[in-house]
Each structure stands twice: as structure tokens, then as C-alpha cells.
Image (cartoon, rainbow, N blue to C red):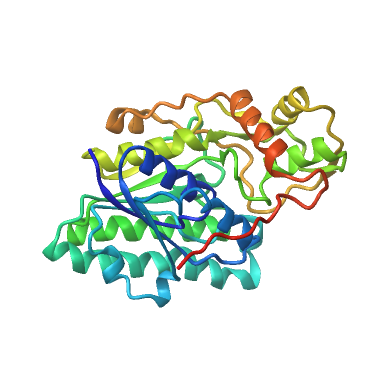
Length: 332
């Protein structure tokens, strides 16, 4: 099944991997991204480097809240909504307004534009990326979608609210949507503020890795290739509603550190207090996604981290400043 797709947040970590996956499947892709400065926009521009050379890919730099979306969505059969403001720790205090704008208001504007178009030209599917942060400290593991969400961070609140909007437009306006709750996605091109990038950098440079909490906290790490495969599979299916996407086998941060040490060498650890808003454990029950669109995570943590280490060897400098910033490709 070949589709005309729109991807918001196309220049980000997951978004750029998704665009590449869709193009490899034969889809035509319009990518939209505001190239915000949550982290170095040059890294996002670099993510676009191979995409912009593909004849079936076009890119539009735009803020969803400040753009006429109608012409951008006119030909779309599937819309993948990945744009938003990431990060649990920075979502407290004055920054909450930015999270509300980029995670909630931007989603509402997109939904309105799709509702208006859906009346005359039905959409096959809106695939919205949500987060395991909506669960907070879940009462049971693995966690099913039927568990009452109780976010423990403002970021989680905005992601849950965006989910509710998608469900509202689905029930009230028959807009076919699926919200996929992603669990700790990792892989090459991961954001520089994420734990695995900092962990691999520490192992390569000898600088200390800040480990928040006691290291016994667990995460259901999910490799990015498994995630983007599932996003397209969900779009091709008849499923609507909410589903988890996890890696299938949660591990502790201590275990993750040990894996990186096996791949690179010793890591110097600097223990830091756990931050408010961080769940102690996460673990996905993925049976709904398995039934609905055949989801099956295939990448073990060692394999996924090895791919990140290989990427670091070719794309990151030896020092602590993170990835190089190449000459940006032309975008419009």
C-alpha cells in the first residue's frame, strides 16, 4: 500500500527516521518542522540531509500554529503527528506555556484543519505519537492501556491532553486517529539531551555520566526502527484508539550502563538525586498493538546500543561538545 503522507516534526529524531522508512516503503512524504531551538537546529537540519535528496520527499519549514495548513494537508492520505516540545525535566515552571503551545494547542489546530478537510476528502488515518509519560508511576507492570493515566510531570499532562483531543475528534467528527504511547525510544540521531547519547559520550571521552537516582529505575527501551515500522503499520490498519509501543523487556539504568561498558569501556558515574516528574519504572503491555497491527519489537538493547555506538564513531567528534554541525542542506 503506497500512500501520500505528511509528517510533522519531520526533522527530529523519530520524525527523520519515520520519513526515511516511509520513503523506503514507496510513500510520498511532505515533511513539516519548525526547527525549534530546544536543541541545536543544525542537528535537525542534518537529519534532513539524506531526505532532501529523495525525489519523493519535500520539506516545508513551518510552525503549525502560524501556518495555513490547508494546502499542506490537501493531498495527504495519512498524517503522522510527531511535532511537539519534548523533555520531562524542563516542563516545570515558566516553560509550561511552551509545552502547552507546542503539544496541545498545535495538536488542536492540526485536528481542526483535518476535520475541515475530512468533510470533503476523507483521511485514511491520523497517527499521533503520545508518550509513556501519561502513565506516571503506573500501579502495574506491564502496563495496559486500560490503566488510569496519572502523569507525574507537566510534559505528561500535555501529552495526555493531546491524546484526549484526538479521541474527541474521532468520536465527535469521525476523524480516524490512533495515539501510540511510545516507551523510551532510542537509536542513532537521538536528541543530545537524552541519557544514551550522554552515556555513550561519557564512555568515549572519560567525562562523568550523571546518573539520576540509584540506577535501579527501569525503562522499557524501544528501538527507533521498531517504532517507525509500527507507525506505518498502524496507519495501514483499521485500528483506531490508543495503543502502547514498548521494547518488550524493561531494563534498569545500571544494566544499560553495563551494556555500554561492554561496547566501549568503563564509564565514570556521577550520582545525582532523582528529579521530580520521573517515573520509577515503565513497562508496556504491547498485546493490543500486536493484535491490532502486528506489532513485534525485534531489536534487543545490546543491538540497538551497538548501532548508536557505530553512529557515534562516524558522526560525533572526540570531544564532549556533541555531534558535528555540517553545512545545512537547502530547505524551504
